[in-house]
Image (cartoon, rainbow, N blue to C red; front, side, top):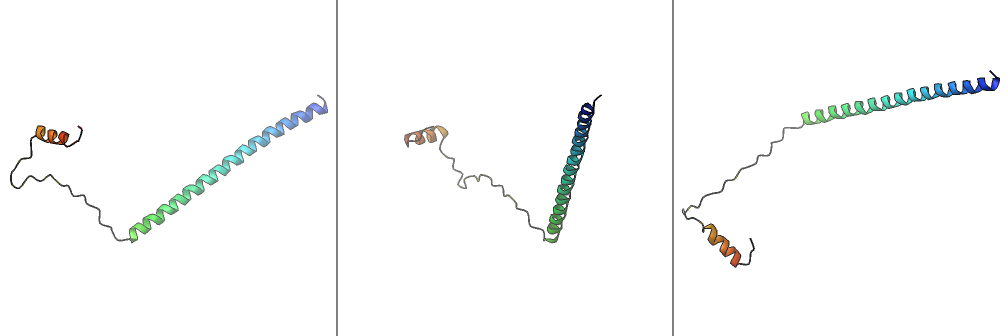
Length: 94
């Protein structure tokens, strides 16, 4: 094996070792960034919960359900056919 061949082989080995080291440090950087994001979310959640606990309870909005009220006089409305005819003669299309 010549010196030139040995140098090429060493360069290949060094290149592979450097790539492995870069991948390892890149993974470490991602892990550090992910842990920082999770820590920040936990801190913000704790602040939000503390703020909500310190505020007085707000009343919840209640939805009133309305029912159709029957006619007080007991009268019935026009029959459906009559009502449709009046709508159609008034220019409305059904």
